Image 1 (cartoon, helix red, strand yellow):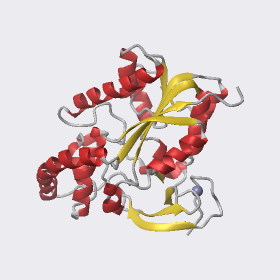
Image 2 (cartoon, rainbow, N blue to C red; image 1 turned 90 degrees about the vertical axis):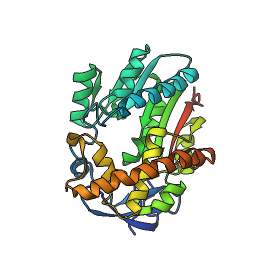
Image 3 (spheres, rainbow, N blue to C red; image 1 turned 60 degrees about the vertical axis):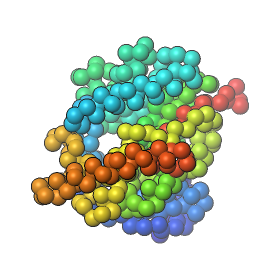
Image 4 (cartoon, rainbow, N blue to C red; image 1 turned 30 degrees about the vertical axis):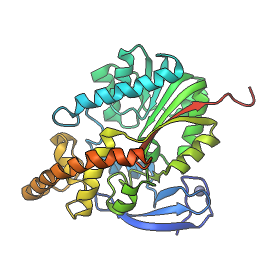
Length: 324
Ligand SMILES: [Zn+2]
């Protein structure tokens, strides 16, 4: 197997875990794990130019992606998260959201008195952030902000690290952007969770090849430690991800077209799958979701209580630099 690259351990023979297909294109990939640092990775990792083709147009380009009241629930969930950051940094300050998408979170933070900035590689999502919310969002690299001497009280890396070719380098850059005592909120899918193990190639959050890296709590903690962070709070229930992820993972394992329910729930312009499914399959996907959702409401909090959720969110404090 080719050597892993996302962890920088080139020349180390990687362990092959299993094969997986992109639910949108059907392209085949392999999940490998570095024998030195245990970091699981997608192989072969597409180049940035190739990856652009793997992000369907609607991936994160609309501010209202879902039907019904889901967006309203999201705003309540965001509020509790923002409050957690405020408790750690002592109130609203300055925040950078790396990979902010259309800027829903920082728009809400600004309304609470935060000075906000976002970065976003997707031109359409960045455009939405500017047009809809009038936010300062552009395709800026963390390295460019470091070079410009920017500093923040908080940085958010929300379901972004798994998309990066070198997440450890980005986390090190973020450490330089944060004041000592500043907070990084980082959320990732949990490849070490029972849901990931049972779901394997059908796990909703595997999402190859858009997810290049598949973190476990320990591989994520290792990256944070090495960059000078101390995790102070780990949230094991991320409701907007975990409930749905359970339902979709089970439906994938039952043999329905991969991530069909996810697409049915999205507004038509934000759908991911290139092939349309039959009406009957869509009805089965929605019908099966009802009992599965009830099961998810029971199982997801149990997984969280056991600290084995399908996703984790870590609040990590930037320690004072030893050289300072
Ligand atoms: Zn490694």
